[in-house]
Length: 221
Image (cartoon, rainbow, N blue to C red; front, side):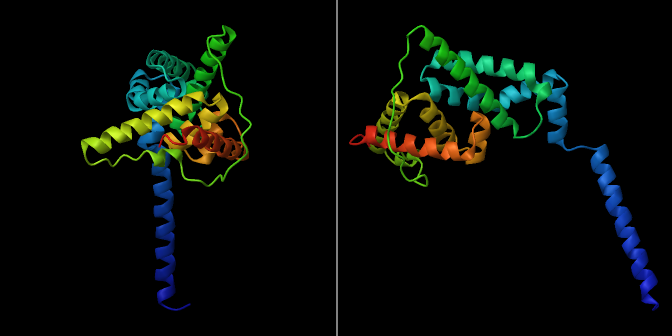
């Protein structure tokens, strides 16, 4: 053994001890996000209020796009957070908290949709459109948000109105995947988790939904 080897060995031992100490510190001092989640699961009111403040606008926007009714969206947003509060202790962390909330919101919208359907106050459209390119650009790209003058801004608003009107005529399964993927910007995996589907089904519905939506928007955008 050379003179330098004992020094090297001592250095390696010290590095390993430092790594162990850091790992122990991580256990003793969890991250702020982990503390937040633990507070939620423990029923901490402050943590839940923060969740509502951080995600209320996102959930309302999602539900408004699914229902196209401001009052309905407000009501369902409250129901979503009420269900979240009741079930947060069971949150396992399989997905992030936003995707978990989106799943609850979508289920609330579905339940309300079924309620209206039973009373024959809502009708959906049956679609048999062939699948189009699943890698096509999101339909929201056709609206654009870079208007530079009042005329362009007015045109952008008209396009958005036309898109939302056409979206409202789609059947619920297509509308859900388009809103979550193309408007909310979730990944395929996040959409699948929120809708409790496999990724292949999400891509198939998205392709068909986009194709049908483009057909309905012909001449409008």
